[in-house]
Each structure stands twice: as C-alpha cells, then as structure tokens.
Length: 172
Image 1: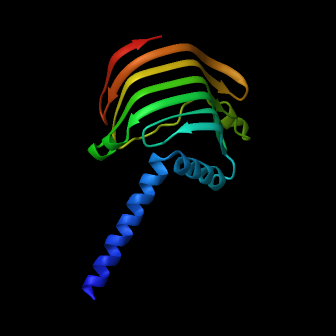
Image 2: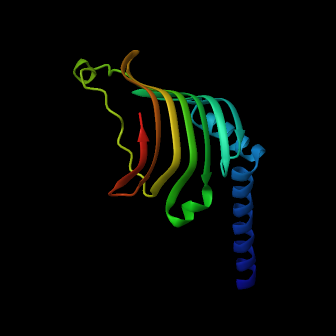
Image 3: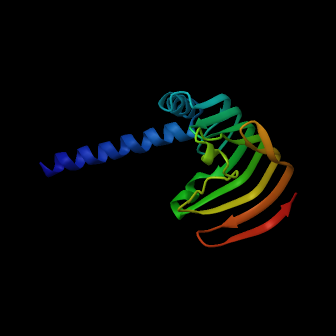
C-alpha cells in the first residue's frame, strides 16, 4: 500500500516537473502557455508575435494588457534571464530591452475619482531583483489619451531587494 502511494507521488512529481520544463523551455510549450493565458484573461492580454522560450530568452511584439482602470501597451520587448535564480530567491535579468511602452490610466466614472493624479500601481515582489542591462526607449505615461510624461531613452543597471535599491549605472 505504501509502495503504491510512493510510486504514485513520484510519478505525479515527474509529470509536473517535465510538464514545467516543456512549458518553459520549448517554443511550442511557451506558445501553448501564452495562448492559454490569452484565453483565460478573456483577451485582456494580447501578444501579436512571440519568439523564444519563457525559461531563457524571448521577445515579443505588440503586447497589451487592459484592466478596468488602465492599460499597458508595449511595442517590443526582448529579454534574457536566469530562470534558475528564482530558486535562490532572486529575479535576475541579464538583458531587458523595451521599446514603445505606454502606461495608460483611465479616468474613473465618478467625477471625484477622475480628478486624482496619475499614479503607478504599487507592486510588492517577494524576490531580490537584478538587471544587468536595461535599455528602454519611448516610454509614455498617459491619463486617458493625454500624455502626462514621456521619456525618450533610459539605460541602466540595478539591484533591488525588499528594503534597498542600488543603481550600478543610470543614463537618461
């Protein structure tokens, strides 16, 4: 009885492990995962073209994600990262290239809420974060369809933890 339960548990673990490897480290698996994400979000998430694998290095064109009070639109993203660093409690991006990024905040239907200033959502990440090389071009922050701020280009490298951030280089 115990032997049968152990074999079942080990078999289940192996199926999950190899399914994860397939989804993250093969182009077909990554494509399947992204298509499922688009369907699960009821088309709030849209990606026009994608290449690479989520587990190593990838790029995509014309990404957008919409929610009730805003939207993110991204022309191009290319990224390489160390997936295995997650097991060390760190998100480590080797390179990140972003072009034509628009963060759009929509006015609320309530008049008082619509007078609020533009603000980015607060995000708490339970990992240390490191980017060796970040290049971003044409970044816009918008309220409704109006530009609030625009950044032509950013080049930087940084490390961040729960309580501190260290800029290794920063060029605007």
